[in-house]
Image 1: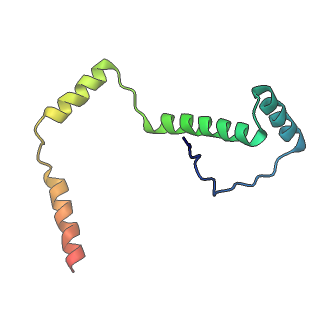
Image 2 (image 1 turned 135 degrees about the vertical axis):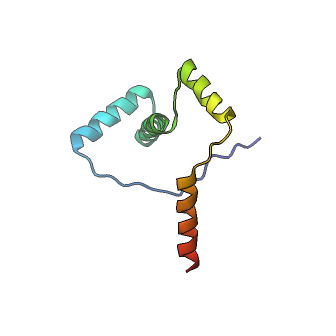
Image 3 (image 1 turned 135 degrees about the horizontal axis):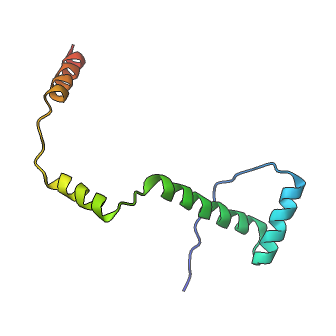
Length: 94
């Protein structure tokens, strides 16, 4: 049974103060990981946190119910939006 590790074909080079490299190396050692694995793990975890904060919306029960109700309601006509779309389409044709 062979397991295939993801292909590593990208590289990031960074410059950092020696004191920071020493600190990161010490932390990696405490975690029982090579420095590069420690950095990848920490960067991946932080990236996930940042993405989560920007891309996920948490609603209260009341907000969720209002959202669902909005989905169920019949779409209202928006004459100004329709007119704007028609003007835009006309410009594209000209």
